[in-house]
Structure formats: C-alpha cells, structure tokens
Image (cartoon, rainbow, N blue to C red):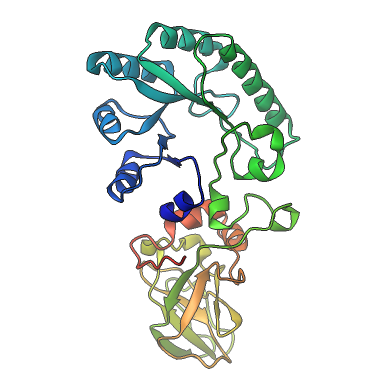
Length: 323
C-alpha cells in the first residue's frame, strides 16, 4: 500500500510507531515519515538514523529533543502538535509561547510543521469543531510572528478532508479513507470512495444441524429449524470481534449469510441453509468489490467503528496486494 501511495505523488507518510517506520525504510521507501504519536527517549537515536520526523506532543518532549540535538550537533526537523480541544496529545495553547521560546533558543531544532487533531471532524458545524479550528488559526498567527517559519500546517483527517475545506491548509492526513471506508454514514458523503480492502476465508467444513440443537459455546444460539452450517477457520484470535456473536454476516455464492452462535477463538459459523455450499468455497468476511459486507454496517453490529475492524481483522493472515 505504501508503494502505491508513493507512486501517486504524496508528500510522505504519517505513522504511529517506530516499528512501522522501520519497515518502510527497510522496504526502500525514502519519502518523509512523520511519527505522529510522540516518542520515547530511547527512540531518538533510531529516529535520527532512519531520518524520521518526530512529532513533539508536550514541553517535556521538546526539551528532550533539544538536549539530544545539542548533544549530537544535528539539525533536527520536527512537527509540533497543539491540543486545540481533543484533550489528548499536544501542547496546550497557553504553552505555545514557551515552546516557541525554546525553539528559537535552540537553532538546531527545525520546526517543520504544526498540527492538531479534530475531535469531531465529521461534524464541521459542531461547536467543538468550530472552536478547535479557531484556536488552531490563532496559534498559527502567533507562530507566524516569530523568525521560525514552519513549512506545513495540518489539521484535516479523513472526515474533514471530505467535508471542510477550511481545515485543509497545505497538508492533510487521510486515514480510514485510504481503505475506501467512510468516517460517517456513507450515504451522506459528498465523495464516493472505492473499497480497497477485502477479508476473505475458505469454508473448512459444512454440517447439518437439527432443530432445537445448540451451536457453539453457551449455546447462545439454538436452531429453530433444520439447518446447514458452514464452519470457517477464523475467530477472535484473528481479530474477528467476539461482539459479532449472533450479529455478524458474510457473503457467499451471491447471498448474505448470518453468523450463528458465539465467535470462538479459531472458528465462526454461518447459516448457509438452502445454498449449494462445499468445503473450500470462498466467502467475504469484510468489504468486497461491491461492498458486499460494508465495514460501516459490520462495525455498527459489533458496537464499534470500522477503524477497529481494519486494524484487527486479518492480522497474521496471508495477504495479497493488488495493483
């Protein structure tokens, strides 16, 4: 996926941890990599070696970076994160003046970019979003008054990228949109996305279940009639959420089939009554070229968000990348 993005002319990659950055560098990708979630002191040597751009999320980290850059006599580009209302990573706006003083007193620090993150990017007219945009704009004006001139300002996530041009500045950070999924109800989107991730599995066994018989642990499901059930060797150990017990569904032979019973560690079961199904038949667990298993709907049934499904499902599984 990284190679495809690189071929499309992106500026660089925003990653959450150093291990991901290392994998991209080992794969030969030389584009800028911004480490978005801060850093720990032991990481700095590797960050410098790999030419990673760290994000400073508080005054403590700014001090660490300044001390490290003085010790190594290296110019250190970094991004500064401001907490404009998310209540998570980032300097508080009232700490910005002190941060700018430290930056100006340490010329080996190069402020490459300034960023913040929206708590409700999917709701551009919500009070908190309006306030966050206002606060970020005010911080930018303060920064522009000093001799340090950041190259980038960035605020927009996937939702804001699609809904709110005022957040775009000169760098954006699409996340879930890269999967072709929506951070809000798909039917409300002004942009049509193409799904790019599909999770598939093969049926391992097909069995008959008599009316009144329980299926799986509990059993939390009992057959109301004679049924045919397909057993699929996927479970919560593979990231298929247990909260999808009796709630999930899959797509096989042109039909949606419901998940029956509890999600086990390594097996899930689907009602395939009336379908001509055999072991080895392939079914879609998530996604599909025509969104046969919409991630938004599956996530809603699991009581979560599509992001979690994308992060968990298929970890450790065989993957095929299509161009």
